[in-house]
Length: 438
Image 1 (cartoon, rainbow, N blue to C red):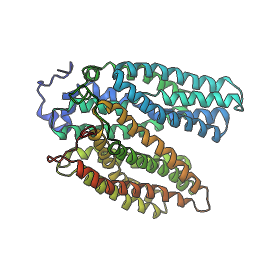
Image 2 (image 1 turned 180 degrees about the horizontal axis):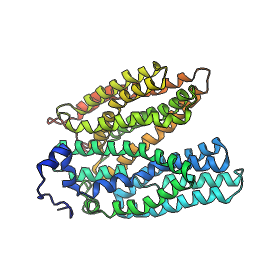
Image 3 (image 1 turned 45 degrees about the horizontal axis):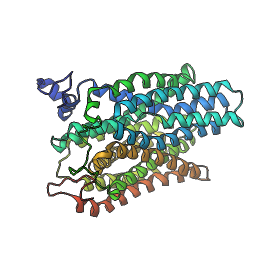
Image 4 (image 1 turned 180 degrees about the vertical axis):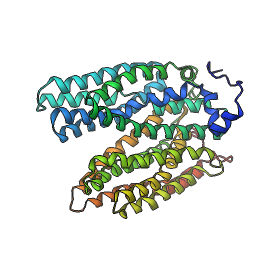
């Protein structure tokens, strides 16, 4: 049986610590105190790579188009590579896959920096080299968030469902925080020191922290042959996968990514009306912070509040508040709307990840979790493109239609999930894994 070396489950917890952490005090007891900070900062490079490539390529070439192409190559690589890494982790175990990915990703980052500075000009083959290296950087990026969720599923397997909700609430908050910190760190380092420094730091963090995450004792839960969340159906045969259940949360994450990407692009257009387009990232960060805080609240929601009802309620809140994006006439009023809009965003993400965790086939947990992450990446690219096209028109505020439509799509998916999830719910109110009754 797995036992954390730094925090045995029998270790006493002081009342002061309980009052400080609340329901989240169970997490370091389950995984060990070191797992939380390692898992938090090991995912930071992923949040730095796209913006880091954009900043570096734009600075070196003097072209926003080249920077955009480089960032797009990173996003496409990440969207395609994430499920591949997840599948390999399911088959071979997380430890060897993460260590290999960390080393390959470090080499890819070095290639991006070297190719950007070594070739004068960005025409023809030089541009191709930069784009290929950027794609490789995204493809090999270790998927810490999704694979951390797989470990929490193993750690909470024989515990109350509220413990998994607590862990997934924390994970969504960690994702939000790193995707706020990452771009901010890139901007700070690139502007104050050098454009190549953010990617160099990302490489160092990858080598040190991703490998630390890979060798953490919790990885023993997922070793091939003794996976706590994997295996057959007891007959020696791998059960059939019910892809209609898996496709539901994946589609939800594509819509969620579309919301994120289009909101970012629309905010650039909005801030540009005030001559402050470079501050759009700060505006978006306000929504990220309220979203992260709201994601933590899901740990305290009643278990009787079923998954499909959570999805409908949270997505409905997103639709209502996204409609308010058309009202602000000043930066200050937009900040207020964004803060409010972030409140239902966090719970929606937690809910979709929760649904993904319970409908995923047990032998493909890593694959499905990384598919959800890829859905966000692909949706972000789609949303950015659509909103960017509308922002170039006569009325830049038309770009705000895209996040509103994305939120509405989430609501429609939530309503559509009602029949499917109700039919699959057990009498206890939980959902079976997607391999059941396959």
